[in-house]
Image (cartoon, rainbow, N blue to C red; front, side):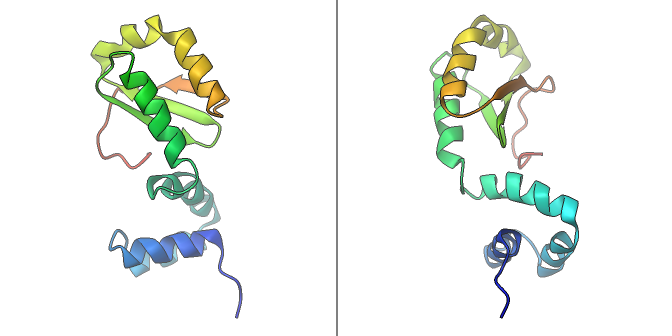
Length: 123
């Protein structure tokens, strides 16, 4: 029996958790580009690998007075989603945020100009 790839294990778990149909999982496994995206993003959403880093990053930004924040993990990139009304506050604390998130392992920190989006599954 062949060893399962991380993507196969992930998609099987998503099927078991009723978050994906088997047909969708099979389709994902067949497409190399989506496999790569899935490992980085869906693996993150399911709480694997970088979960604690995201939580620490979000907690740090909450501590600056920004109530609505989501940090999206894209490997070494942290994409920040905040309410557009908080953009100026985020920029005011720019250097502090960069330092804190670099210490957590992110190489690049970006601001999503679309603002905060609830339920977007790291898209």
